[in-house]
Length: 493
Image (tube, rainbow, N blue to C red; front, side, top):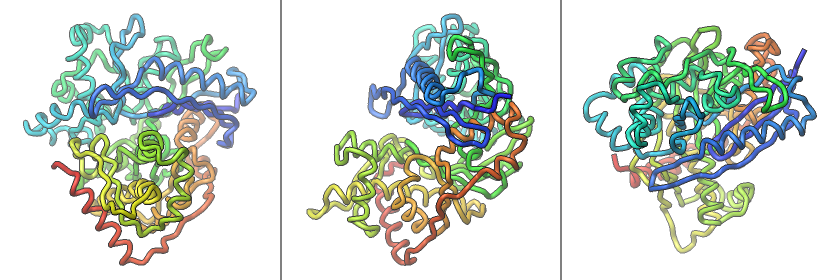
């Protein structure tokens, strides 16, 4: 029996593929960055064809590194940057425009109008989301309204819409599969999370023809076989979940009250609420955690647009560092009591502020401020933003005593210690920090019987290090008060 699994982890700045064995151990990994397009202020785009090409390249490279033939794979799991929107020609497979990325804010004025017209209550009730440019619905509408002839062709059934998972699946199967999973569907603002179907009222509100949409399946399901030409043999695509949901699964947060926080390009804190779709009164999102065997599991989520991207900006934009790993040394020099605050609102602020017009700022500068203080402020901004989310979650009545962390910044011990200090909760870092890809592999493994149950997956989770709070309350409160003041200065709401 085939016991290897291939996870495709298609992210905002790079595409990765990881081969896992039947115990969830990483065998080989390949990664490739791709181009970011910023055509106007607040606009962010990707070339969808480049996303596909880079994904195929890393799949082949990872299999080659692992010495594993495609015929030895039990299945493929896909996890992806969410909300990023692609519309393509069903006949040719060619995108009609660059993909519009989740960070993109071009539809801010449309969202403002929809909210002022009183439509947000309907969107919140049906989807658990707010009206914001972050989600896919207004991105689709923009493409149909701004690409010549697109709306007419969409209504005639000539075009297909998908988030990145659907785009990759379409290409892997040579146009045979037009599916998405319940987690990615739940991030479009077009999917009713209560009856688990596309919502006709929302389709009408956002002017999105149903003919565009993929069919929604479970996270572990039969998505079709890859065409043999891509990897050398057909392979079952057996699992799909948006990146944050996949990380929740990879972290084995299967019980209500369990939470994970992922530190990648952005930061996303997700708390499992079980079969209850808990409605936030503090501008957090109610979303799908996952759906298995037709049964939805819900979560409450806080989304931060810029986490690792702040360090990328300090590296590539300001050139204050040459590698992100240098940041810890700067932070050790400065210490936690840093008077400088960096608010990384490069594309607005996410939860719980939801201000698309906010822009970034560095505050607290003096003649003594140097590179080390600004870099440290970049690291601390991620932790302060996480505290904003935790405070909102607690105000919604949810209990949160510990967090399981993952993503690129989770390997930074200084950041993780500051995080647990500013949150005043324990922070658990797993043995495997590539939990997003691991979650995709677990889903494919559940469908192909490599894994028998969620309980078996839970038993595989191991803690590599636990961070415990060790900061005086007065310092914690003072530092966070400084952050709140800095945020207030950049907000336009």
